[in-house]
Length: 243
Image (tube, rainbow, N blue to C red):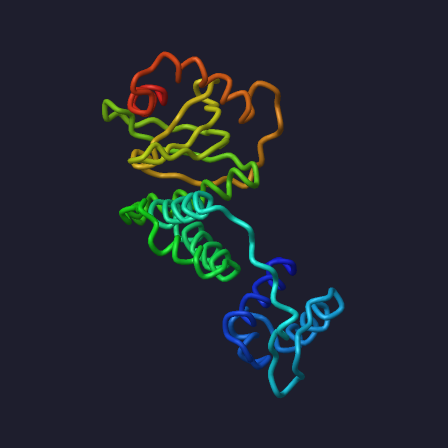
């Protein structure tokens, strides 16, 4: 966990739970008590007044409460819906991050806006991807972040299996399935691969270079004419573009 993220989480814990001992904070954040002592000292130096002392407990002084975040009702509803979509349809780490982010936003909102989140008229049915697809999501997100090749065994729409080495560029959710948008080394072109048709996948150690014509922005420019011509695009692309 990055230090900045840990400091924010420390503030939120103190805000939500009132008085906390260093041991409780260390357990929640997965760090040592010595790290908590250093973090509290840094928060005080930064102007976030944390009251208390080692061996007794810590709390945010009243003046240390951060001001409420200013959101409109529509913005709150949109944030809640977006977070619930990620919770319902993404892989475990992303879903947990969305839930944590929504809790942090809620803790900084005035009561009337917190009620808006609880009573939002838009909701999402929880339908997490299967275990294999969720694992693929996590692995492929890491591969995109680290620019690593992926070796795929993929089943096309007609049921035939092919082996590919691809440069992963983007993961896209169409409303019922996830697809990996990639540069395919076999076809020497951009392709999309439905995650539920990936039979096997391995994130390779080798990283792919940055090359004009094979990057995410190039893919999106390549996709734009298809979006205008295809109706409905997702089904057409998901079944045909991977061949």
